Length: 349
Image 1 (cartoon, one colour):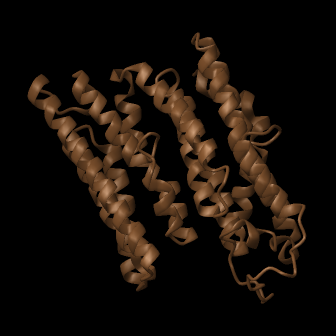
Image 2 (cartoon, helix red, strand yellow; image 1 turned 180 degrees about the horizontal axis):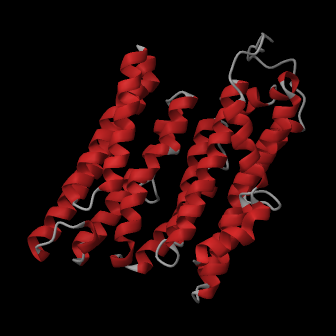
Image 3 (cartoon, helix red, strand yellow; image 1 turned 90 degrees about the horizontal axis):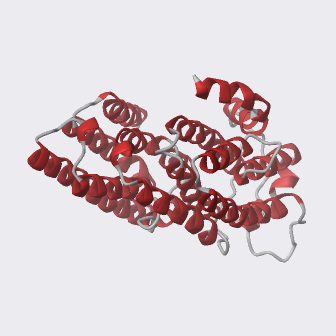
C-alpha cells in the first residue's frame, strides 16, 4: 500500500477513536465509530487475497449492523425520553439494544461468531490493530452507559464470553483463531466487573492490550501462523521462544506474571460485591483458557521440529525487524505484578 494512503488511513483510525472518546452526543459517537470502521477496511483488504477480502466483508457487515443498532437505540431513547446525551440513556429498550450493539462491535458472546473468522483472514499486524485499538472506542461507550444497564445482563454476557473464549480455543491449530478466542475471554472478564469497578475494567483493558501486543509481535517476528510452525521458533531465537512462553502464561493469568493482577483484583471485587458464584465460575472458565496457552507453550519450548513435516522450514537470514517495541512490551507483559499495591492505591483514590 502507498505510504501516503496508509498514513491517511491510520490518522483516520485515530481520529474516529478520539472523536468517540470526546463525544457526549450519540450522533457524534456514532460518527466516530463509522470513521473508525471505514478507515480500517482498506487496511484489512490490502493483501488482495480471497481470505482477506472475505474477512473484510464479514467485518464490514457486522460493524454496519452494530452501527445501525447503536443508531436505533439512541434514536429510540431520544424519541421516548427526549435525550440525546450518552449519559442520559435510560429507557430499558434502548439500554438493552445498546448493550447488544456494543457487544457485537467488540465480539462478546453470544454475538462473537465473526471475530475468529475475521482475524483468521488477516495478517498479524492488522490482526493486532483489530484486537487492541478497535476495542477502545466501543469500550469507552460501554463504560459510560454501564450504570444504566441491567447488572444481570452484564454478568451473563461476561460469564458466557469467558466460557466461550476458553472452550472455543481448545481444539484450534491456527494461532490467529486462538488469539481471537483469547480476546473474547479477556473481554468477558472486563464486562464482568464493568458495573462494580470501572477502574478495574480499564486496568484489565490496558494489561490485555500490552500482553496481546507482545504475543502478536512475537508471532510476527517468528513468522508463525500455526502451532506446527511455532515449533520451529526455538531454533531461530531461543531467547524469544522462552519469553514468548512466559507471555502466553501471562495471558493465561498465572502468577508471578502481569496477567495475574487483573484476574486477582476482579475475583476479589466480585467476592466483595456478594457474587462468589460468579467469581467461582469465572475462575473455572479461566482454566479452559489456560489449557490452550499451556498447549502453545508446550509446542513452543518442549517439542523438537519433526523432519517429516511437509511445511517448509524458513531460511535463517539476517534479522532486520525493529525489536525495541517488542522488548518494551514483553517486559511490561511479564513484570508488572509487583506494582499491584501501587495500582490498588491508585484505584482507591
